[in-house]
Length: 476
Image (cartoon, rainbow, N blue to C red):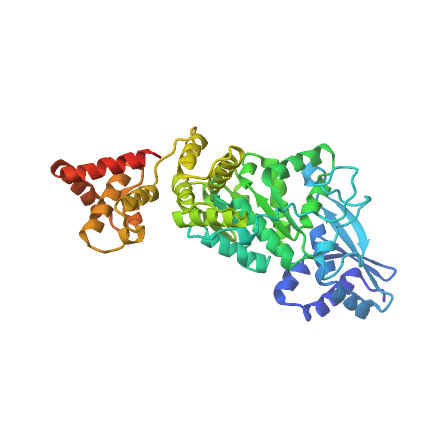
C-alpha cells in the first residue's frame, strides 16, 4: 500500500516528539503541514522563511535522521516556504527548496537567507558597484567601555549594557532600551556594547545604525524595488544596535518594517539594543504593538552627570591625551557645564585649542573667558554644585564637611548660605536643594533661608559675606 504524505509526516512527528521538548515541538513542528509525497520525497510547508532558517540551523540533523528512518536511505525532504510579501501589497507566494547545507550550522554569522533568483542580498551599507562580503559593524573604536565613565547617573544602563555584551541574547535584557537627553552618552554606550561583543564573539554579526539612516535605507529599497533584500539583510544580524528610535514617530511604513525585523530577531534569540530621547511610555506617534515590544526587556535611563562624574570625565580625557591640566581649571569646567557630557568635552577641546593657537597658558581666567563665549547663546543656570563650591572655598571648608551632619557653627552657617543662594539663584525644588546639602528636608532649607535673611539685617559682617560670595557666583 502506497504511503500518503499525511501518514509519512505523522510518523515523522512521532519520532521528533520523542527528541525535542514539548515547547519546542509546539513552536517549531506543529505549524508544519505535509503537502506532498512523491518519488520518496516528502514536501512540507513552513509558514515563513524565518521558520525554514530556524529548522535548518537547529533541527536539520534530527530531520535528516527522521526521514532516513521513515523513508530509508534514499528518502529526501523538501521545504515549501510561504513568502510573505505584504510590503508592496503583493500576495504571498511559495518557493520550494530541498534540505541543504548552505547554512553553516553553529555559525549563524555566515548564514544567508534563501538566494531566490538573485546573486545575493544587497547590503544597504554598501555603495552599489562595490563588492563587499562582510557586514561592517559601523562601530567607533573610541567609544569603548574603558572610555565610558561610570557614575550614579548611568550605573544601571552601563551595568545592563555590560551584561548584554557578555551574553548577547542570553539575558532578560532583550531588548535593552536606553533613554536620556542629548549628550548624556546613549550613543557611546551602544558602541561600547557592540565593541565588547565583537571582541568576545568575533563570529557574531554586529551592526550599529541610526534610526534615521535605517528609514532612508528603507525608502531607497522601496524606490529600487528590493525591499525583501533590505528586510533579509537586517534579519541576518546577530546584534542590532538601533540608535534614536524616536525618528520612527509618525513613519507608519518604517515602523511596520522594523516591527517584522524586531520580531524575527527576538524570536531567533538575537540581541536588540535601542536608544531614544525618552522612555517608551512617553513616546508619541508610535504604534502600540511596537511600543509594547520596546518594554519587553529592560528600560534604563541616562541622567545628567553629577559633579564627581563630570570631573572624572574631564580627568580621563586629559590623562588619555597626556595633558598637564590645572586642577582648578578642570573643576571650573565641571562646575560650569552641568547638563551635557558632549558640551563638557567640547568646552575642554575649545579651551585646549585656544591655549595652543594663541600660545596662552591654561589658566582660570582663560577658562572663564572661554566659557562665557562657549555658552553665550545658552540660557545657563548656576548649579547647586557650583554654589557649594564657591561657598566652601570662601570659608575654606571641604565640601564633604559642609554636606556632613556636623553641627559646628561655622559649618552650619556655610551650609545655610549655600541653601540660601541655591533657592534664590536656581530653579531647584526645596527638596532637591536639601538633598544636595547633606540629605536635609525642605523645612530645613526654609529655615536656612529665613536665618540668612535675618542675619543680613542684623549683622553687618555677615552681610559683607553674602555680598562677596554673590559677586564670586556672578563671575560665572
